[in-house]
Structure formats: C-alpha cells, structure tokens
Image (spheres, rainbow, N blue to C red):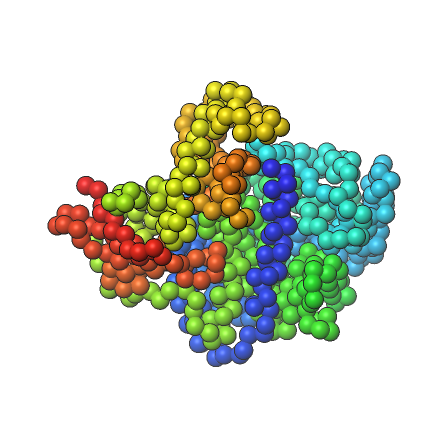
Length: 585
C-alpha cells in the first residue's frame, strides 16, 4: 500500500503537468460578456454531468464565473454554495512556501540554509539538504506517515514527525532528482515555527489571513464550529466524511486548511499582485528549480510552465484527499485565475484538470467539450428512477437528479457497459469477481490457501494474512461483503475487482488485482473505479454522458421508451449493440 500511495502522490504531480499543456496557451481575448455567457453555460453542463463543488474564473479583480453545484451534504440534500468550505489538501504547500519566502524577505533565513541550522541531531546523510531542495522536492527524502490499515495519515505531533522523517533512509541523493513528497513541506512548516516562534496556525493567521481579510480560511479550527459549513467527501470511498471527522495530526498540519473558493482567489490574486512577497521572492516561487521536461517543472510550491526565455506562462497546483479534489491556476501574463474545488470524484479520480481545461477552451471561444443540454421545458416530468434489468443479464440502478439520470451498475455485464462500453471479455471478469469473493471468504476463515488453492505464492499469502489481521483489528468482525464488479486494470491483461467490506467499526472499498487470471495484489481503501455514470438530458428521452477520464464523450448513450403501459424502459446504446433495460415493478 505504501508504494501505491507514493505512486499516487507522484501521479498527481505529473498528470497536472500534462493536463495543463493545452491550458498553458494564452487565451485569445474575447468580449467579457461573451466569456461570461460561455463560462456560465459550461458550468451548467458540468453540473448536469455530476460535478459537485465550486468553479471560479477571474481576470485580475474581475470575477467572470463563481458557480456552485452538487451537494455539500448529499445525505441531507444540502447543496453546495459559494460559502461552502473545502479541504484543499496539498495546496497547503502554497502557504508553506510563501511563509518560507516571507521569512527570507525579512532576513531571518535563506533558502540555501541546511537542515542543521534548524534541527538538532540531523543524520549525516541529510546534513547537506537545503531549504531550497525541500521547497522544490529535490531533497531525496522518501515517503513517510501513511497507515495502510486505517487508510489515513498517522496521528503524530510535530516533533514526532520531524524525528521520523529525519531517521528514515533517503530515497535519493539530495539534489539528484525530483520526487514529490509531503515530507519536504512538513519539515518546512516546522522550520517556520522554529524561526518565527509562532505555532503554524498562528503564523498563517497573523501574517496572511488577517492582512488579506481572508475571513473564510481556517488553519487552526475546532470541528464543531465548522462542520456544518464543510463539503462532505463523497463518491470515491465507501465512507463519507468531513475533515471535522478526521483526527488532528502534524502529517496534515492539524486538520488541514479549509477555505472557500473566493478566499483562495483572494490569496492567489495577492500573490500575483506582489502584495505578500517582494518581487524577488515572488520570482523564486515561479522559477523552475526542478525540471520535468522542456519548459515545465516545479518551482517553490507551484508547478510552472514557462516559455523559451523562462518567463512563466502558467503556474498551478492541485490537492487530493478522499473525494476532495482541488486545483488552482494562475496565468501571470494575463492575470487570469482559475479555481476548482470539488467534493466528488469520477470513478475514483480527480476531474479538476479536465474541468479547468474545458473552461480555458470555452473562454477562448472554442465550442464546449461537454454535451449540449436540453431546455428545461423539454424534459418530461415522470420519474425513471428504479431498478432495471435486461434479458442478457445486465442490472442497473437508476435515480433521477434534476435533468440527469444517475446510473449505477449492479451486475458484471452492466459494469462492462458502463466502464468499457462493451462486454468483450465479460466472462473472464465475472470469474475474477467470483474468485475475489472466494478470497475474502478464505481470509475470513483463516484458510492457508486463501480459498484459491496452491496457486497463490507463499509470500503473498503471508502478506495478505497480515493485512487481514490489521483490518480486523481496526474494524472488528467482518459483517458483510458486496462485489461491485470487475473492470480492466491499468496494465494489459490486468483486472481489478472492487468489493465493499463492512466491518463492525469500519467500512471500506477493497480492490483485488489479477493478471492473466492470477492474484497479484490487494488494495484496502481502493478508489471506486466502477462508480456511477451521470447522464444529462440532451433532449426528450435522450441522455448523454461525458468520460472525464478520457476527456471526451462517453461511448454509451441512453434513450427512453416504454416496454408496456406500466414499465418504463431505457435503451443503452453500447459499442457492441443496443440493450433494452426494463424497470422492475
């Protein structure tokens, strides 16, 4: 699990870079009224396709779009609005990097200073690490602090975290390569405390939040005071939560930074205007210190894409935790600022990159990449909600939400249609799912062969037995197991079965990986790569979806019908033909 979390952290960095390649171009100037209308239309389409959160676009001080959609608390049907608080996760690095540069502006430290200037008993292999290397993720420090059983960061104080990071073996030689690791910025936050003499939350409050009138940003906060204003993390995991439900830990600097999109805009705008830092310090933030390819890399707390002379064209950063996904972009030449804060993912992944890339396109005058919506008056009032089945064995659950259908697969064939667009290879995926259930039964019963026979290597059997022991210690007795289905994995001939496990004190999604039919790994707390598909009404009886993963139209569409007077039907137009689903009585 540790290697997977490390891979995910690196993936965030590189996918943001690649996804921003198109958006790095300067938008062609359009009349602002036209831009406002195009952005409003785009946001409305995105909302109908399942986006839950807040989208903000501005040029300078002029806010062109500030749109809230989806649910702050789906269980109680409380909608998001522009005052909803979101957890920004790794975008906290912005505050840490700016704090270090502010202290350098005052002459209280230098980014060339090494760790022994701030910490006692630094091991010899880390004594040459500089603050600049921490800021640019080139220190060589490795991954630290994830608890795979609890699927969360360890609950530790500052000194315990600092000691733990410094005592771990280096992953790379300092200065040798870029490796995106939270450990770098946890040490930097500790440096801020030791140099300033203030607690981290007090420093941010006094130096940034109060002078900038950021009254809807919270660094040190009490759970009961803010819980009702927070967006719930929903859609990615089997558990819905707010950050008020998570214990405080230095591994996320307390409970982390929660804020509104408007306050985040105020913050980025202040950085851009040079209000917070000197010109030289701001330039350091936006200078590429760790190259990741021609014209792009990591600065200090920002990813940077620059022109051939090194002038930044766009600087950006994202943050992900559970179903909290966020991204902010600043285009320094034009002063354009783009922010997406969301609290529901698409099949376990962030859609903020795709969402902002589309916003850039429409603001430049390009057609919206999202399906055209029907006018509100064109949509029939009758509800299509219910459980549907097809003669070929597919089953799916349908709920209605405004002008959209929310479709959840409830059988392997439905999973295939709603994740792949066809059922080729469905038999093999069905077998993998049945074997995943056998594995859980084998783990629960303590069988030496894990219910799969001697084909499982002895070392893997021991690892899985130890993992299961940890899960049951944390969650108690297994009460139920549900197979959500199996879909194609990331590699050729790889499949991933997703199950929902409910223990006495916990519930989680559990992934079982197969390659060429053999068990290869398990993932407690996996992302829900199956999930639901949101179909937006494109006309009477016509629904279209958008594939946020592939950044293009979804290969499956739906049309409505009526199999009989009392049995509505939906025709699923898949890659391997049309399938009629009829609602059960």
